[in-house]
Length: 250
Ligand SMILES: [Zn+2]
Image (tube, protein in one colour):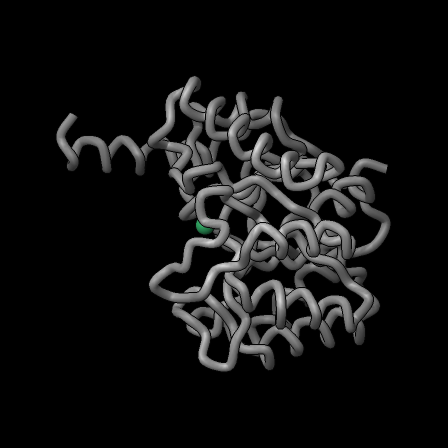
């Protein structure tokens, strides 16, 4: 298939994934919730990001692609296998982001099955007690064709389409807000928390590196600190994706 046609198909699959839900799930959390999620395991998300969460008594969800562990990227130094194990043992959640960091829309059913199995095997080899209940779409690209399959494999799939989840939601396409300096400021963070409070919602932040000079996909410690303080000030529990799902299913 030529590249343009393949891109067009990817876009259609993504749009369908955004608009057509497999199931309607009603969130039953008794209070608003926030989750802090980090993709691709930059080293600074482990050192600075996770440590900041812990200082607030919070834990995050780290979506790991096995192939990216220990592989420095143009935008950051990568975390390594010991970092994955350390995060897990400190109470953070390790989520799946495919093994090869591939867009869901580029994978057929067998391809997705292999990506999930390979990533699970990789993580369990690091520590057999790592449970993998949560998934995030690499590059934020959903795929309508893969949603049924992902529903069987994971409790939740996180997108990067903006919004605060509340009421009836699509667990295979949860909305999230960027915790990314280029895309979000302090007022935006407050507005997102306002919305979570008005609608008893589930606010999910996503980001990558956490450093003074963040990549175009990452945030400064100051922005993360602002979000963590906003959560404390508003008495909103910061929960991993799996913990939030337990509250939402109660
Ligand atoms: Zn990613």
